[in-house]
Image 1 (cartoon, chains in turn yellow, red):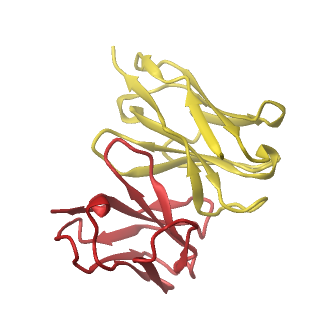
Image 2 (image 1 turned 180 degrees about the vertical axis):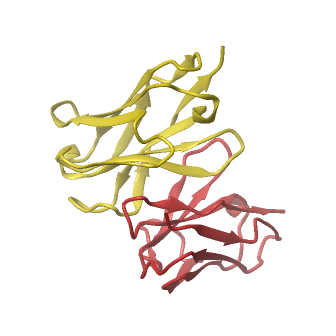
Length: 122
Length: 106
């Protein structure tokens, strides 16, 4: 079964940092681009960042550019999202999502993780 | 960035109804559009990709159409499990964007 499992969420103070992880299984991880998508409580979906299959290309939403950094370790089937200078506007459930087709990005997301919650509060 | 606007924001319907949700892009996105369903407390699930292609395992009552800037998601014969929120998403550009969502409620 194709799965994505996020971890690393939690409570962080304003201005703090956090690193999220997403581990994939059931597919050839290194063949697929991955994205992070977030959803603030009671709000809609917001794409945050993407990384190509090789990790050589990265993309960010304007709202996180310069504060967030995406990376991946294909040997560990894991993608990371490092988040700095967090503010209240960053509080959300963060989902990891896999594109549908190998080596293609952007593409529709056919598999999503269950999400990990980030809370920003003093 | 390309803006995606869904209408309506909320839709009241009954089991057995035919439901149509519209998504408009602020500029042409060809057919690089996906539709997702999200039930409360769950991750989104892909229904339609490339505007009109059904994802494997999705019931045939779900269909998508459109190209350019205007798209529709149609649900024929609404089932109890279809009461959820639906999102469109453009992936014409790397800065992919979602619509604000349409909640289908009883």
